Length: 69
Image (cartoon, rainbow, N blue to C red; front, side, top):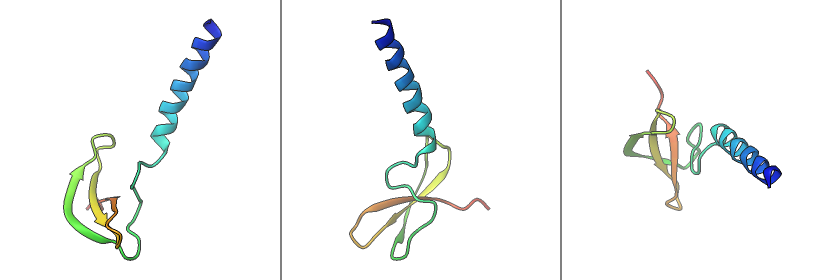
Protein backbone atom coordinates (compact mmCIF):
# COMPACT_ATOMS: atom_id res chain seq x y z
CA UNK A 1 0.00 0.00 0.00
CA UNK A 2 2.83 2.40 0.85
CA UNK A 3 4.49 1.69 -2.52
CA UNK A 4 1.25 2.48 -4.37
CA UNK A 5 0.85 5.78 -2.52
CA UNK A 6 4.49 6.68 -3.17
CA UNK A 7 4.11 5.94 -6.90
CA UNK A 8 0.91 7.98 -7.00
CA UNK A 9 2.68 10.88 -5.30
CA UNK A 10 5.57 10.73 -7.76
CA UNK A 11 3.12 10.62 -10.69
CA UNK A 12 1.36 13.76 -9.42
CA UNK A 13 4.64 15.63 -8.96
CA UNK A 14 5.81 14.64 -12.46
CA UNK A 15 2.48 15.73 -13.96
CA UNK A 16 2.67 19.15 -12.28
CA UNK A 17 6.26 19.74 -13.39
CA UNK A 18 5.47 18.52 -16.91
CA UNK A 19 2.50 20.90 -17.16
CA UNK A 20 4.80 23.85 -16.50
CA UNK A 21 6.82 23.11 -19.64
CA UNK A 22 4.07 22.15 -22.07
CA UNK A 23 2.14 24.69 -24.08
CA UNK A 24 -1.57 24.88 -23.38
CA UNK A 25 -4.20 23.89 -25.90
CA UNK A 26 -4.38 26.42 -28.74
CA UNK A 27 -1.30 28.35 -27.60
CA UNK A 28 1.40 29.30 -30.11
CA UNK A 29 4.61 31.35 -29.94
CA UNK A 30 3.63 33.33 -33.02
CA UNK A 31 0.67 33.57 -35.39
CA UNK A 32 0.64 31.29 -38.42
CA UNK A 33 -0.06 32.27 -41.99
CA UNK A 34 -3.80 32.69 -42.53
CA UNK A 35 -4.64 33.53 -38.91
CA UNK A 36 -6.54 36.74 -38.25
CA UNK A 37 -6.10 38.73 -35.02
CA UNK A 38 -9.22 39.56 -33.02
CA UNK A 39 -9.79 42.44 -30.62
CA UNK A 40 -9.82 39.96 -27.73
CA UNK A 41 -6.80 40.31 -25.43
CA UNK A 42 -6.58 38.85 -21.93
CA UNK A 43 -4.07 38.26 -19.17
CA UNK A 44 -3.37 34.55 -18.77
CA UNK A 45 -3.77 33.92 -15.03
CA UNK A 46 -1.37 30.97 -15.12
CA UNK A 47 1.55 32.82 -16.73
CA UNK A 48 0.67 36.53 -16.25
CA UNK A 49 1.24 37.07 -19.99
CA UNK A 50 -1.01 39.20 -22.17
CA UNK A 51 -2.46 36.94 -24.87
CA UNK A 52 -4.25 37.87 -28.10
CA UNK A 53 -6.85 35.60 -29.64
CA UNK A 54 -6.34 34.77 -33.31
CA UNK A 55 -8.70 32.77 -35.51
CA UNK A 56 -7.96 30.60 -38.51
CA UNK A 57 -10.06 29.99 -41.62
CA UNK A 58 -11.84 27.07 -39.91
CA UNK A 59 -12.88 29.36 -37.04
CA UNK A 60 -10.54 27.73 -34.49
CA UNK A 61 -9.12 30.01 -31.81
CA UNK A 62 -5.39 30.33 -31.11
CA UNK A 63 -3.67 32.21 -28.30
CA UNK A 64 -0.47 34.16 -29.01
CA UNK A 65 1.47 36.25 -26.47
CA UNK A 66 1.35 39.97 -27.16
CA UNK A 67 4.73 41.56 -27.80
CA UNK A 68 6.08 43.46 -24.81
CA UNK A 69 7.10 47.03 -25.71
